Length: 560
Image (tube, rainbow, N blue to C red; front, side, top):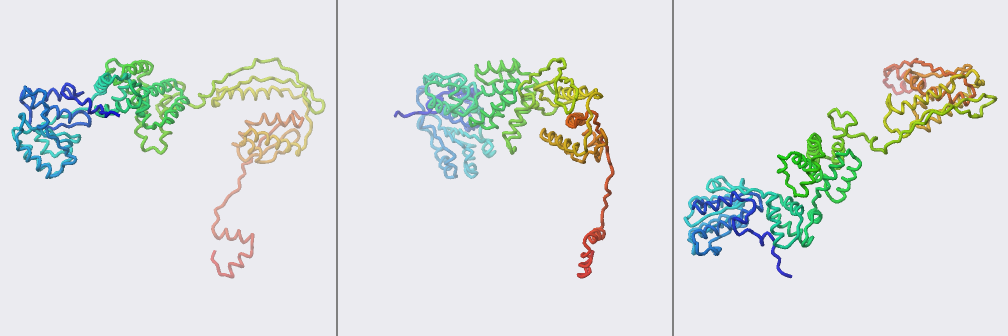
């Protein structure tokens, strides 16, 4: 097996022109060398992997090349000294360094000392280094590099010329990866390289390491799918699909889609955070002035522009607010999945116009997501004559077929279809027995009445009408001729029974074969007066029930 060299080392820049994303600093250093205006103590600071050590090495070579034009290919390795302050951070290490500084270079004009991770030096080492750094020999140049400038003592900072390195832009990193892919003869999708550049988060060294890893996974062809799978990155297509479902108010579908994402191993926090960023990208894609803020590949940019046209500005602003609020609450939530699902339901309800939202978080009622009901209204038909077996010789009764409404699942209101259906049912009962003069009026006993009364209670209990059943069991009906008397303790119970009176009367008339029955509901508001008894009064009540208690009290001389 041949020795493999990682891309971060193989393609480390050898000149300032090769350095990615730090043009301002490289131009400044080149001009300083050209104009002989270079300070003897430089501090390179910035995030990891952005080129600090690389620029320090290039600068160290360029300094001596500028003064020895005949040796342009010489790297002057003997004039460059690198010290890792992470492992050489004691006072003795710095003293050893200051002693070496006194010796002039054998070749070239300058000796360059690169101290990496300089913030790791101890306080005593910093103090030992102060005098040398303030008044170095003419042949010595110090280049300090650190990722944490705030840890360096102010007396050191004041003696250095500071260069702040910035994070490398996504487009710069992508273009550099594209050049490397061409050199390595690797076919790479533009979106795949863009995802790698985003994942690197501004560090070119990280981008090259990720590039090597993905190439090892997928071979000489880098696709967006392979990159997202290997890096465990949620593909932006998932966010496009989610947004389409949210705009269409499809709450069930978006919840199923979220469950699919969770089943792939992604966290809800990662998803909602990415969704908020997706809404932000759609927002900047709506205006031609802000499209340049969209750091995505060319293919993705087309999709963003298309979906941005379908998304209203008000929806995006509200969506960003809801997603950001969910992101902030996620860590402290006890039920994190439910928190994200509630946020998704609220997002899917933003563009819904079916209800008045009143400015509060709104979720579309679940009843609207059932299968769309088919409302069928039967045509009125001619009353048909039905032979009904009635006791004795009852005349034929005309049966009126009511209008029926099927499949309506909305809540009942004064103007709802169910309320109309209920009124039609009551009207049917009233019309059916409107003319009772010719109908039978068979006498019945109170025992028969109670029997059929209890049977009706059992029927309505089976239908789940417990409230009416409990009211009918509150007392026993009595009869006086064709009039049934029923007594209740309050008017509230009376009003509830009055609403269920017509179906009850119909049942009793048919089963008792008496179509002239009337039901009179009376209210008896007599109440038993309750008293607050004293302990002595309570004792007297108990003595009335058991007189031996008094004998017990006297025997043991007990107090009341």
